[in-house]
Length: 79
Image 1 (cartoon, rainbow, N blue to C red):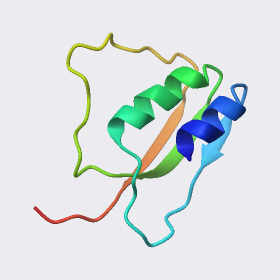
Image 2: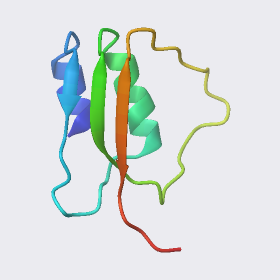
Image 3: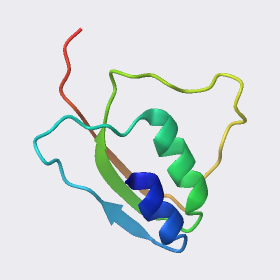
């Protein structure tokens, strides 16, 4: 859902998804992909699933110069 929204609105400047009470399915990899789709994004907020660390260690670092606010609510999980 996140990537679909971001690819549909590449010029979006603000996106906030509120916690619905369910566990988030948005992963860190999706976060980085979404940031690349919207270079003019200033504010982004949504719950993220921190139970899955799916970052590619061989991926090129990204630099998102327009992002001013990033609010990541962590979903609840137990180890």
